[in-house]
Length: 634
Image 1: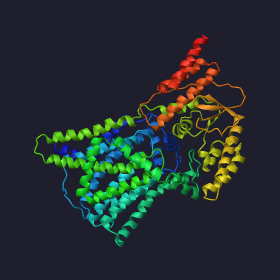
Image 2: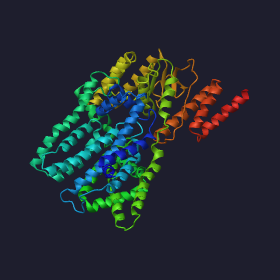
Image 3: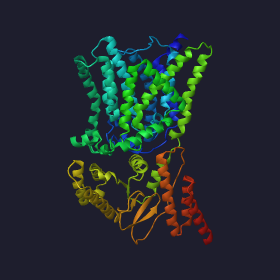
């Protein structure tokens, strides 16, 4: 019994229990295939040792490759989704350890007022375990576990940095060392974390505060930083992978960062600079989103506990409150100035702070309960604490559950399987076609004959290196127009004086030349999002979820479309757009097929459109009209 109690009260065992519980929950909501946005691209990068979109994510690529090589009889995307599930669950356990490390460190911080505890029993960690589960079941943290992305690893790394930094600071002070081994490890992990995601930089102000709080601003502190620096750069050295691998022309070579200039562009995220600090209007909108979305992260009961945690930190441990406040404000102030749709993951550090304050609130509840002389108070406390993770699970599962999400897989394959042989597709549906097509074409070898061109990536000079390497015939047929466009694009990319109208004119001219040349030898398709200035002189014939281009007045030989659709429970901005695209294109197909006398095919497609969204009256009305015309013919 004594041995069992020792195991139960062991912090590592408790952290393992929290991770295991989280992992089992996350498994129930994991996506079975390719999900939205960068999932297909990142799976391809990891599987082929490629280079991802800025900032490259070399650590993710290397670890992902190791995961893919595990000899288990499932396809690559499942292994990588499991990798994210495992990393997120592991991060929840590390969050538990981080909370304990913070408490121990700030009990010793100079100038701290309030009560301190010299010992800890098993029951005293119950609020920390419960708070860790509450944190792990917040919607943004939970969402990192459902499909492959870089943020699960990012979450784990920044928690490891926080945990080891706090522990290392305390060890250095207690032992009177220049720097402890744990602090050296923290420095290495900090550099390593930068090689996965550059928003690791948001940790620096709060870590700097803690460093100065303990060591002050003096020459000896500078000696400590100099000692830590080599270990930081050792971790950061993983970035050497990016130019070295780019020189080998991998399948995925985003940015082609083989030379110093392009490497700097890639690592610094030059492509996205126009979206960062773009104006107060964007910041106000993102801040409003963060505030309005907060109840979707944490149930109102949890928010009450959070308020208690803020009060406790402010009253009993001002240095800890300042540390957490700096981390929170740094994260929020940076993230609200990044003008992108999928901003949730950039608030991860802020949610870590919220999670730590929730634990402090639970500790306040525990202390208050201990003041009552009730024989059944432990049962009441345990029941009350258990309610919190359950409410989090119940309120958030619908928003994150991708266990039946085949939407992206079906959509991408519905396009690919219905294309003519050796065809060209021009689209910029990155989130649910172009990105997943990378995975299906290059890893699953589904329709490798098709040339998929991302129209917006044609605005980047590196993309032409990709086209020349992967599709040399397609590139060479328009080389003159490409060179003319690249001449103007060079000015833009190198901050030289340029004429935006001239760049756009050559851009449109180049794409239309690509279409004109390609249509002579193969079928060319464009997505419904492609504007009318592209492909003038061509009719757009609905062909499944794309338009097939046809010379005006030309003949038609369109084939029957095979459309597969599996409904999923997940609902968000992307599913709304995807469903709207389905309904729009299937309705246009039906109208075209009716004009060709192919009534049955038209009705079959409309049935799918109605199944996808039965609320659209125009689709149902069109189905009734075509059904009536079928009866009149019969």
